[in-house]
Length: 334
Ligand code: LMR
Figure 1 (spheres, helix red, strand yellow):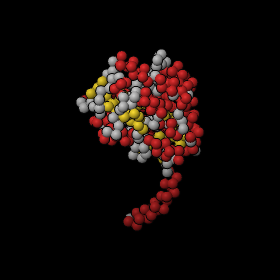
Figure 2 (cartoon, protein in one colour):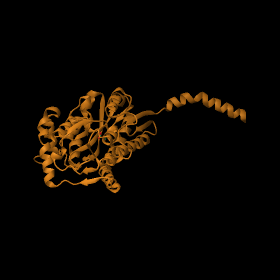
Figure 3 (cartoon, protein in one colour):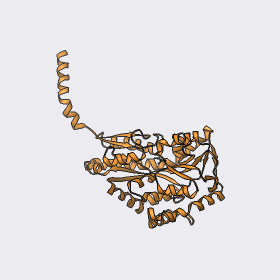
Figure 4 (tube, protein in one colour):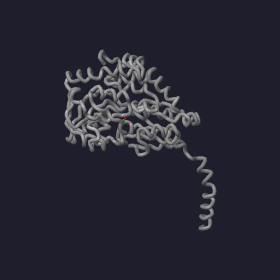
């Protein structure tokens, strides 16, 4: 009996390498910078579950949350060289690799609500923007929502004059830079993974983000005020390394596309709820004072930021800005 077991074990060792090789799954490393418990984090996990199920385990998705693998700028470079296969950077982060057009969605107040956003991303504009990624060695697969941004700082901010001279962390977008300059503030590009520390140590005075990002990064613990400005939008472009994607067996790619479609629906149906819950959690902790701008204060903020629409025409394209305004149905004066 014992000899038989040893012989069987030896045989198993002998056949194991080739069998293992035949079954080795295709690995997709999906890197992103936010917490697991956010709209993007949950979307990534949903894609992982569905992709592994639909391909019967022939594909393994490794999700790396919270910048554990790469930070903002590094992750795009890592995708281009094939060190990771999938990312979902925000629209604001494609400028440094030479695609400025996604920054149109950074224009303040250009997206009035998620239904309007959907008209832009699901229509011809969205498709055209995704195509721009091809020349950078990427394939754009989907648009995922986060939501609308709120300002945070250690002093209450009501009108543009309150922003004067304050240092604000921004994502790597020239439109966001122009936005804060229009308010008289000093913008500073900082990787998402370093925002909490920059706020804590006073390297910057404030920042803008969605409630889910503010809450999961604990920014509210080092910011006394949260202004419910809803002045801009954060959403993501899910991208894959083009060479890797084109090289997949066609049947596998079809299953992954199906998984992505369903994960996108899931992510976009739950983002609003996630942000509302995060706001509630921040309120519950009681460390942050909420400021709701009056209608008059909102008008002042819009007016101060309006000139950047003309200013940014040269960067993101005047006709693109006009097309987004027409599609989103953004009102006069934005
Ligand atoms: C930020 O850098 O503030 C956001 O883009 C992070 C993210 O991916 O939501």
